[in-house]
Image (cartoon, rainbow, N blue to C red; front, side, top):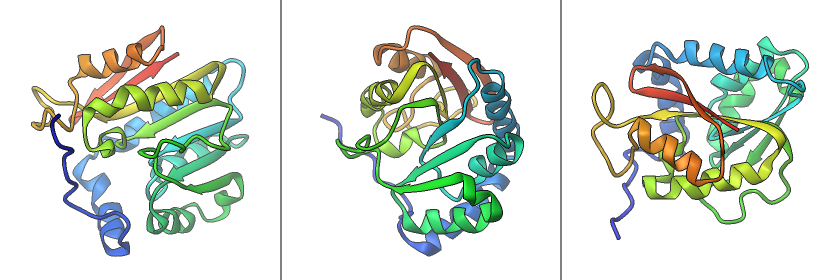
Length: 204
């Protein structure tokens, strides 16, 4: 079996977490466009989404946008890094009253314990932190188990291939991302956006 791909940074460390926070949007200027699409997709859901789980929530960029755009929303931010959660709390400020911070790794077998159900689960640039693409179908299966019957999964990550990333062990092609969601039991998978090596899918 191919070995996992080591991470070049340690996001448990405050310095590395802060560096990621300071550079993420500069490296990917289209990220706010993705944040806006997440918000519009959630707003369009029927019945109305009240509670969202974000996987790999990091320093809170997506959560900040969602909470500001959707005043009735409550966000559960799941991340394995206390340093990232501290950055997120600072970023959210008063919005944090509608947020819950869960320090857990979705790489662990028991990560779903005590969570759910959710009308929506979102994730932005986090699936590849599994450190090998072979783990993605299992992650998506666990997400599906957390969703309510009409729930929506919005998943955005880097893709491999033309205009994308080069490591085909860490990253999936757009087709592989779709196949991983279908393998997890989602019956409807739609590609919503492609920009700057990132693709956003909606799965139901």
